[in-house]
Image 1 (cartoon, one colour):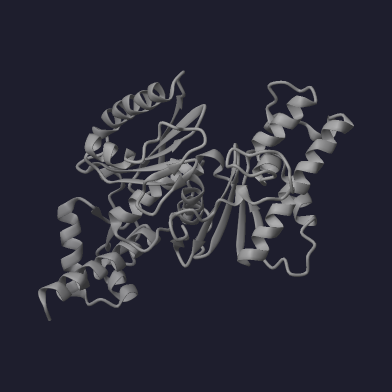
Image 2 (image 1 turned 90 degrees about the vertical axis):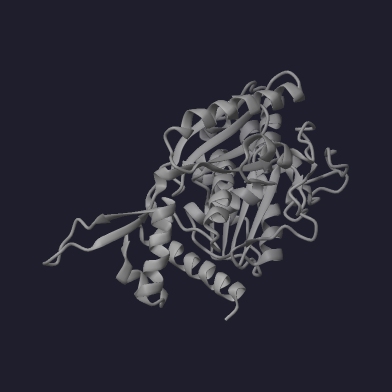
Amino acid sequence: MSTGDASYIRVLNRRLLIEQIIEKGEISRIELSRLTGLNRSTVSAQVNRMLEEGLIVEKPSDVSNGGRKPILIRMNAESGFTLGIDIDAPVTLVQVTDLLGKPIQTYHLQSCSSNQETMDNILHEIDHIIETHSSQFTPHQLVGIGLGVHGIVDNEHKVVFTPKQSWAAPDIKQQMEDRYDVPVYIDNNANLSVYAEQVLQHPSENLLCVTMYSGIGLGILEDNTINRGTRGFAGEIGHMIVQRNGLPCPCGNKGCWERYASEKSLKRKVSALGIEDVNLNELKIEDLEEEYREAIDEYVDYVAVGLNNVINIFNPQTVIVNSEFIHHHPLLLKQVEERLTSRINDYEQLVSSSLGRQACSLGGAMIVLKDYYEVKTLDFSGYGYQY
């Protein structure tokens, strides 16, 4: 066997062990050998190496079946941390997680008067956040940053188009890597959202997640891989035309789905009817006057039109709708589903996201951990984290 082959096998063995340790939470060396099929000497060699790195820790089991308590292995969650960042306006979210994906703290950074000032402020605040948490998570400290952009990011992690953040330069990845000396991953917000859903809530190999805030995006997860398309443009479902010669869209078309079914579009319509500075989540729909209820009913119609198209194109197992408005008014999701009447609408479940606006920043943090552990995917869904 060549040196290269041996090195490759060690990487595969390490991946198998890490996936099992993460999935089980705590596990013995003997059990690791049984579940992975690796012999005990291979398991011990890998475990000893990870102990030296500070990646895992050992402790006696709390349960004994007689005799000496078995020694259990778990990931050393406190040895480092990640940052997941959702750059948006007027608020950018920064999510700090430990190395087991547990949310530690969420920061809300306000936009400034200019694009450059906003970017400078974000970087300044990130500096402070890293300094605050580096002393708490040793020896590895910050292991990476995952950055979500509301726009198009190509397959080389370069920002192609951002309708709201013109300052998001194509080389922002390199700028941040030079500044923080850690890997930086940049992706579309919907792609990061669907990955967060898989890792933290829905451990399925195939998922769709529709994000419906200022615009509409589609995260597509197929066989544990994010489908980005040929150049990274896949999932721009908000620019699917649902109304011929309809409302103009910044993308250049007219009648795009997000002009009718995003939360921003609903808020605009309700405000035009007379409710200023409306908080959609606090609306008591049943108490509204008829014209407002008609506006919401039309919104639900358009949501269903788009989802009908998504379902017929992808034939998904699970469709996750990430909308705080729909999540706070669960009856609306039922009304959407009632409108999916086609006999070829084949899917298993339509669910509302419980991650909400944190999905993108959490997904950024999870992408970092996936690469850090060099695994095919992660599964923290059984850890019971609160969001």
